[in-house]
Length: 348
Ligand code: A3P
Image (tube, rainbow, N blue to C red):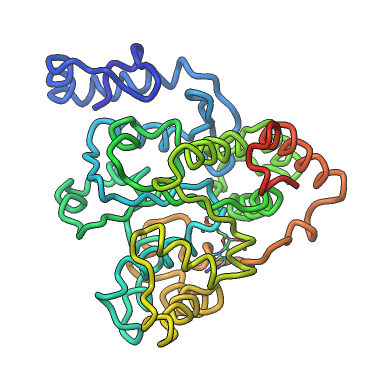
């Protein structure tokens, strides 16, 4: 368990072996330490959780923060690992399906592909909550290489042991206005009915102050963007809107980055288009496994498989935000992200 929380520096939780053993042998004390940490952190209003905690510049739910501490202590990176990491509702479901299909191209046939009966959210592990599910570590240690993981953690919160391990990151950006609208709809599904509802105006206000799950969004984006400029071979930034506009180009780009470029024969056989079709919004959404709210993959989970497929469009914000709200978000992005040429390809 993460123990020396008071002495954390940057991303590293320095824990002496002696202390670690002491805490590992005393889970109650370790969880007291986590509670102690929560009590020291500034608190904000949560969207789907009751509260968010301000931790090293970002707003995390207690579950996400506990998950991070568990990752710090338990996750052993391999240099070949690939992380899909982005803010919630930016397109992870789509990217999960694409990443899995590309990496496993030689392993599966399109006619009997695992994605036909596995929801993308379960096609590879979501690291942030993995260690809270009491699954054996051997489950992820024995995954075939390259292992795939998804996460919503900001780059700066990833343990150094991971970012320095040589592993690769794929991050997808989406117009923050569409992210906001998508998060808002997701909250309505996920927020406990026992908690007071959050109006769209209130959510908008929180979002613009940076108080959203894993927010501020712009700091999350700039963390990956800066890292991708420093190490383009290790960090790839994709844009949801580009993927929609030119899927062929972007999927090929992704495959190249993953070190698995399509061969001429594969391209001629239409393999790239097959992957795009399999992972498209309509195709995934219409699969029985992604349509049903029952079944083992939904059991005990507050958010069901169909909730990950809403509209899948670019610009749905126009149906929800008045012009002033849209301009307000654009201005924040210009001020906070676009200065100095940073992320110029994304500026509104
Ligand atoms: P909307 O709420 O705007 O429809 P995430 O996967 O990161 O949770 O993001 C969810 C958003 O991606 C939702 O956006 C969802 O509809 C959309 N989405 C899910 N699967 C998609 C796909 N295959 N292609 C495009 N968009 C997809």
